[in-house]
Each structure stands twice: as C-alpha cells, then as structure tokens.
Amino acid sequence: MPIVTIHITREGTEPGADAATAEQKAALIHGVSKLLLDVLDKPMESTFVVIDEVETENWGWGGLPVEQFRARRRSRDSE
Image (cartoon, rainbow, N blue to C red):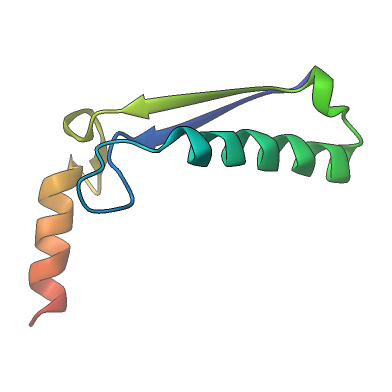
C-alpha cells in the first residue's frame, strides 16, 4: 500500500488564486497513482496520496524564506 505525500506551497498558479484548485489536486492524485501503477504495478485503489499545502512563510529555499529567495533571484535575473 503506497502512501505518497506531495508538499506544495499554498499559492495559486493563476492571478488571484491563493491555492491549487480542486481540479489541480485531483490531477496530481490521479497522476501519481497512475505512475505507481505503471512503474511498480501498484493498484490505484491501494495507493494513498496526501497533498500538504504549506504557507509560503513556512517554506524556505537556499537558506531564506521562499519570498526573500525569489526576490533575490528576480533581482539577479534583471541585472
């Protein structure tokens, strides 16, 4: 019985969205379950997928909170 946990930041992929949509989450669940079926022959009905949405203030990257990291990266890219 596979259990897969997906961690994503709580932010949308479109302007005005502040989280992944229900449709996007359903696609992730289906896609991961199908991948385990195709690669490891694990039945989809025995696969559990958990999506954990994390506030960006609780997400770090490169030693910085993610928003600071992104700002630094943007400033470097614009140079």
